[in-house]
Length: 242
Image 1 (cartoon, rainbow, N blue to C red):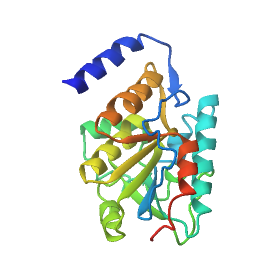
Image 2 (image 1 turned 90 degrees about the vertical axis):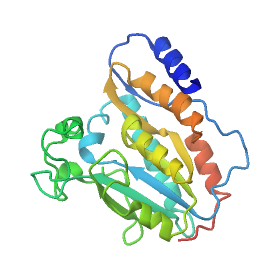
Image 3 (image 1 turned 135 degrees about the vertical axis):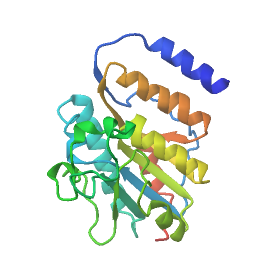
């Protein structure tokens, strides 16, 4: 009942606005502990940072800020000694027939704008600002909102004895929300970096962003932090076991 009431209040407060991208400049973090640490068994998840999706936001001021924040975070993670487990997800299908989706499915309609992306498609490649460490970071394919659908994400996290995950990605109401809920259900300590999540442009983008990061996730509870908190926590985390 509390969950429904929170959503209703936030939705009513949103009102009708013009289309705009959903950024995270004024999101209230749920973590206030100045000694925040991710421990030693943590993994960094960078979700769906592919060309076709980033192209929808990289021409806006809010989108440019999100790209800069996310790239800054990834670079900071890579500077750790040793770097923790970092996993990048890419959306693409086995072939142009999109066998993972099937004809006329609800999810097929949701990703219709992506066309028939395959592993070699330019649009399915990671955006150049986001650079994985060669022979270190993990890149996985996905064809659903949840980052672990149809790939070894959960097997990797379990095998590496991960207990904490830190999420960044595009978009907040898709892969970020779906993955945060699923990994919370699997007993992971989940952190979402608000500055590193983004809603593509629609009438209620900014409101959806706020509802998810300040209304839905904290009720689970999933931890919502700023990029400043995340980078500061790195200095107290590890050395990562990977």
